[in-house]
Structure formats: C-alpha cells, structure tokens
Length: 238
Ligand SMILES: C[S@@+](CC[C@H](N)C(=O)[O-])C[C@H]1O[C@@H](n2cnc3c(N)ncnc32)[C@H](O)[C@@H]1O
Image: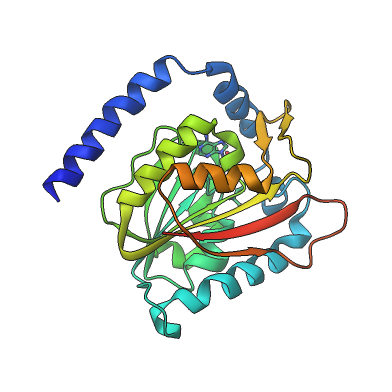
C-alpha cells in the first residue's frame, strides 16, 4: 500500500506538471461548450434523451454478470461515475446496483442540479467532485466499478492513458473499469470542434487500454440505438 501511495503521489506531480504544458484550448473549449448545455437528460445526450432507457438497459445487462450478487466477483459497495453530468447513469444504473456512488464532473452547474435530478436516493451519493478527468485522482482502492461513458473523447491520448492508470489504482480488489463510448467506423478518429472532442476508432481505444496496462475482459456493441449514430462499444477492464 505504501508503494501504491508513492506511485499515486508521483502521478499527482506528473498530472500537474503535464497540465501546465497541455493544449489549454482543447480542454477550455469543451468546458465552454458544456457550460451552455441545459442540465437535462436531453442536454446530456445531445437531444437523444429517448435512447436513455435502451442505453441503461444495455449497460445493466453488460455489468450484471460481473457482480457478486449474480455469481461474479465484483462487490457492490462503491462506484464512481466519470463525466457524470447531472447523474443520469448514477441515478438509473449505479445507485440501484451499488450501496453508494461518487460522481466526478467538469462542470459545476451540472453537479448543482444532480441531487435534485436524482431525488431521494441522492443521499447515497457521497461525493460530487468538480474536476476534469485529466486532473482527477481517484482514491486508492476505493471503487468496485469506475464507469466512464461518453466523456473519454474529451481527453487527449496521453492524459487518457494516465487517467486509466490512476483508475486502475483506484479499484478495490476484483474491481473493474467500464468504458462505454462512441466509436468511429473509419480508421481515422473524428474531431468535433464544437464540443472539442475526439471520436476514436475502436482499435485506438483498444491500443490506449493496452498501453495503460489494462486487460479487456469483455467487449460488446450496444444494440438498439437509432440508425445513423456512431457505434457504441462497452469494454470491461481490469
Ligand atoms: C455527453 S455528456 C455525458 C454525461 C453522462 N456520462 C451521461 O452519459 O449521461 C459529457 C459530460 O462530460 C463532461 N465533461 C466534458 N469534458 C470533461 C472532462 N475533461 N472531465 C470530466 N468531465 C467532462 C461534460 O461536462 C458532460 O457532463
């Protein structure tokens, strides 16, 4: 544990050093974009609120077999929702499955709405961390599941790798990271200048996960989304 603490301390120093030299415009533009977005499910999903139930059902079916309660190894004590917005995933997916949830989100105005949106069960949301994932350091060994959905395109490759490494340290024994993201069908990634995000091809995600020292234990394409949207892949990582 002492070694782990030392490793995390080093990564904290690296994070801060790295962000001084980072492309501030890339992260700044995303912040400005999301500041203007309404704190609603439609706002979270770019006008596609209607896909939320399909999304949540797909996520639940993907995660459930790993949980102790279903014969798997993952505890149901504590989850972390990354790029949580107003807590759509926290409310519908994580709180029904875990004793408590922490949320980390870049924009304070989403977090301000989160407890109201989640309702009475928000008493089981312990922490609302206002932070970019590129700077966030999960507490060592705290989380049974770290859920990252529709946010990792906002991190540059180098920062995504470092974030994944910190998440790995943040997992409890048998804990897992879940990534659920849009993927580009071409070999090249797409860049969206309006919200300052990348859509990476599946292959690039796999490479970045491997470079982070993570192992993919399950992978699945989300079914039932409307035609014309990006393919969405779920990855379970250890
Ligand atoms: C497409 S929304 C998805 C919200 C939530 N994951 C969901 O599926 O309902 C993207 C969210 O990521 C947040 N975000 C953008 N860049 C971020 C960053 N660098 N670190 C943390 N959150 C970020 C935005 O403020 C927004 O709440």
